[in-house]
Image 1 (spheres, helix red, strand yellow):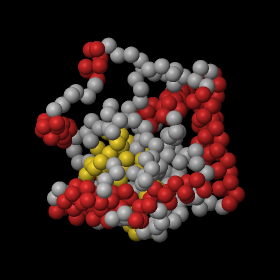
Image 2 (cartoon, one colour):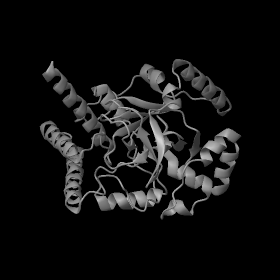
Image 3 (cartoon, one colour):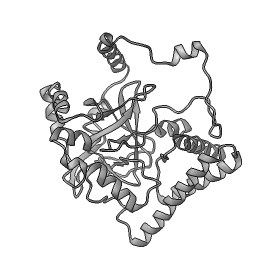
Length: 337
């Protein structure tokens, strides 16, 4: 996998968590910042004008949005959205997505536009109002999505908000600090795993969520992503977070259903990854020490069978590992050439 692909996949997003907001990465990594630097680059007025989001009158926003969407539609197509390489089947976890053919490492499986984009923290009346603005077809698609039947705050929500909370992704708009809930009907069929075989990222240039295979996937294998950044959490901590956010009675992924001995080993690895991440955060001026810690994280992730790029509580640590992973992959390629 190329370093560009690794960095792009690093800009991942998480499923909506209720009531607490999940940790997310911004849509792009800091430009021209090395992973051991603590200072951001300064921009000239010209660069600021070229790179910033323009000030737009509220009355013109719908028109601008329509122009942007029409432009991006002319630049790409919906092949990946209309015919993703999976079939939806009923499982013990509800519905799941299963590969219909061999999927390659780094392959784009789907690039899907959201069915709806709603603010966070909606009341029942506000959610109903947003729902009623949708077309009959859109409402039908929305209501076909699953909602949790387990315990937790989501269970007590009305149907519309429960469906949005169960199937939504919490995304921060680039350059605004504003977070909204996005619902992607096809991607919503992909189940959670604590060691996923796919990773999701939001491409705001096309307003599409993209799902990539992060390991070769055999035909008939279930496709999975991680709903929350839980790589530094033990099994018990993951179970609590998923129950609180989505009402899961328990996570049935291979990591969580392994033998007690294997779960204990997994928990130890994840605790060490968390400690190393904290060391990276506090030791940014120690370049050699930072690289040693990042390499140890890579080894632990490999032992854990975790193929995706990890998300840490501090985004700078996530970015640091993304850069290091790209450097490591590049060194492997150069060694083979």
